[in-house]
Amino acid sequence: MKPILSKAVSVSAIFMRFRSQIGLLTCCILLAAGGLLLTACDLSSILPQSRSPTGEPEALTAELPSAETPTATVPSTMTTIVFWEPYPLDRPEGQLLLEMARDFEAATPGVRVEVAAKSGVLGVYEAILLQRQEGGDLPDLAVAFPSSIAELAEQGLVVPLDLFINDPELGLSDADLADIYSSTLEAGRFPLLGGQLLAFPFAHNVIGMWVNDSLLAQAGWQQPPVTWTEFEQACYDVWAQTAVRCLPFVESVSVFDAWLYSRGGQQLSDDGTRATFNSPAGTDSLTLLRQLIDSGLAWRPEEEYGDYLAFAHGQATFAFSSTGNNRLYTEAYSQALQSGTAAFDWHQAMIPQADPSHPSTVLYGPSFFILGSYPEREQTAWRLLRWLTSTVQMARWADRLAAMPARASALAVMTDTLAVYPFIRQQAEAILPYARPEPAVTAEFQVRDILYAAIISVTQGYTNPQAALDVAALEVNAILAEQP
Image 1 (cartoon, rainbow, N blue to C red):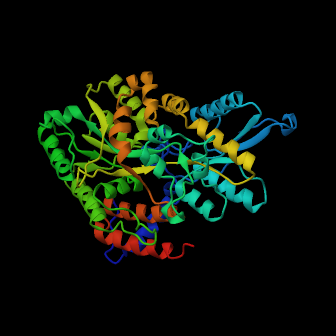
Image 2 (image 1 turned 135 degrees about the horizontal axis):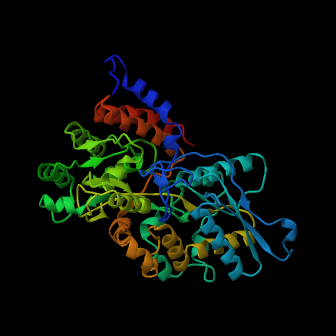
Image 3 (image 1 turned 45 degrees about the horizontal axis):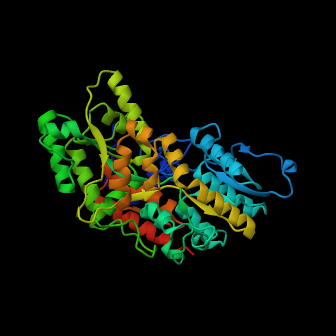
């Protein structure tokens, strides 16, 4: 039962109360395969040790075992580099990365790769900070979120990749660059750091809209709604014809960011110095959600992971979620069929837009980056990065994890996977090209924490969208003003 609050309770107090309850939750982001399987909080997709279909970052700290051979056994003529990755080595993601590193060694005589598993993407970042503080050796290649890479770059630890990409021997051809989805490549260029390419695509995901095509057809819709006005109408039409509700939701900053982008807004200003999520794009997004809640067409499921379970059982027309959740939705659907749910047609489409001629959604997830050391080790780290992101290896990663690849050519190799998950092609061709990254500012996790509290205060009915976002913007602006 929702608690009854006194009118004297301030919005700020409500925010603080919720923030105290979600500290770890909002430090988590879904990862998964654009990568990674987003079995995490508002990540697939993003954190290996968490499970949630919506995509919010999670801070994990315990360090996991590494796959290293004693240094004494390494011939002196070998170049040894260290790769810190976020997945436990007994998980499919970690096992696959270790296999790929060993295959790289076999194909690259004279090179040895020490693979060390850290506890999640944030765990990699935290381990780097701790190692630097204690004066220890840093890895040569690592994986982190853009905001973490930006902070490390400000400290002079990150090697720009443009020189490697343009190198006549070590670089990438024009065909290679054209093959990588531009949205994922440009996500590694940080405007606030001179536009240098500091990160390279690894496990990116985008927010899309899962659609029950059969329910829509019963309500007279032959294709998914492409505008927000159509989306709202489709919700009411399906309810009128089938008595099936519209939208199960779990509060998610990444989903909210996708809604902002789709309405021409964004989370922060271009220079990263002030909040802009309290613009009409933000208030309109939460207002529509609140209206659907009030009408009974949108609801927060009580059971864990209830949003994708409701969709899989044919109890919802739409669901907003990460492309990293392909296996979650497919497995839930298979189980629903076994329990007696009637089969229905479904896929993931682009989210509705304010202006369909300029579509946009959010791109998020971890990236590769190289840390400065010695030229030979930096070059070897680049060679490993280049190898891991080649067509064959990208297809291997996406195949094994039912993920969306960062290279278009990988789709031609993923024939068996596409037979099981045909919507991956739709994700890669109709959603990914229009995705934009979330802000790469050092205070991004604090921003997400505040924004999450604002969203939940609206969905729980404690305040209205404009008031919630305005108060959140004031708090965010105070934090951004303290950034270096």
